[in-house]
Length: 421
Ligand SMILES: *[C@@H]1O[C@H](CO)[C@@H](O)[C@H](O)[C@H]1NC(C)=O
Ligand SMILES: *[C@@H]1O[C@H](CO)[C@@H](O)[C@H](O)[C@H]1NC(C)=O
Image 1 (cartoon, rainbow, N blue to C red):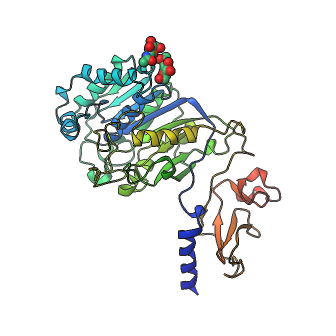
Image 2: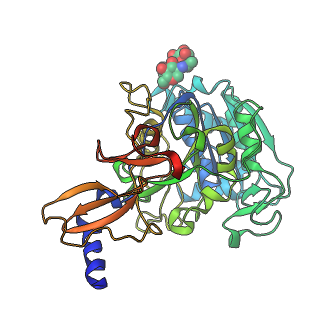
Image 3: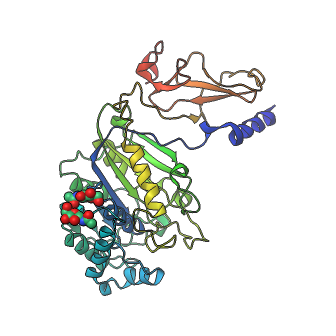
């Protein structure tokens, strides 16, 4: 009996089930004049690359132990030079790259960088990316009129600085995923600078939703050296879409992708606690290792392993992340972000739900695919498909709505009181 059930469930997983894959990235009520980016190391290089390419849309960036735009355009040899001998990098050459791409309309007009805020962090003990790289990228930003702030005095090795997680600040953090406890809340200090200086202190816990979403519909796949799944954090205050929220895109470093760490970069850098307290939705797009592409460590492409477009708006990773940005920040104009008509999040299978029988296999007809209410508890519902009845749970804050056959905002489902809030 158990075997049969497992078998049926596996068949469902493989053939029937949109519902059981990563959810589709949803649209939220976002103030598009508040979009910022950040990243560590290769993710810092990617954040600058993304900011420069989409400078008309991105208001600021926080670059931790990162590298300047176009520094590694010549490939791995240049990448090594940028990392170990950045003193030899000539900033005016990189500025010319930006101007040329801007004139060719391969990136947004670089004049958009003027007045944008940039925060640069580089630890004094970083031997993976020499701290001079931080000065060089700050100089490059300043050449285009960006307003910069920096922190170059902390004795940090190569890693993301936090005040609650990781190896000691000056010790290798290879075992703690390149995150260091420097008694310095990097996410909070950087975001506070980028967003005007009056952020609320980070929440004590990130009580919102950290969701996984499908990256493949945006071109995130093995060919682009991206994971099929990304993470997005939706603060409690942004879930019903009645309030306009801010948006931030955080790029992990090499060896920090979902393949390497699951959600550690999303949960241990302090970013989601800042986000929770200040209604900032955070996208954590995920790269993935691709040995054939020359990217065994799941680095974002900042040296051209995919192709020569890697740093402009036509780069596969750049395009994919930009499509995610547009999706998450653009409510359907026809809905005006009204929750009653906005598509609610898709749901995930239940692991620890009620144990009541959900109907014997066979109760659902062979050709049935139907969502049904679960008697007595509006949080749950069942999928009748391929003669099996599978128990599913609506995302937090949602109830199954028999009128539309899917989960909906709880206040819109009559007959279910809010006792499960
Ligand atoms: C970029 O913008 C500036 C200022 O608006 C303008 O003078 C320049 O012609 C633009 N360049 C291109 C390539 O569109
Ligand atoms: C910003 O970039 C866009 C797209 O390249 C361009 O149309 C616009 O003129 C730029 N704005 C400024 C102030 O340069």
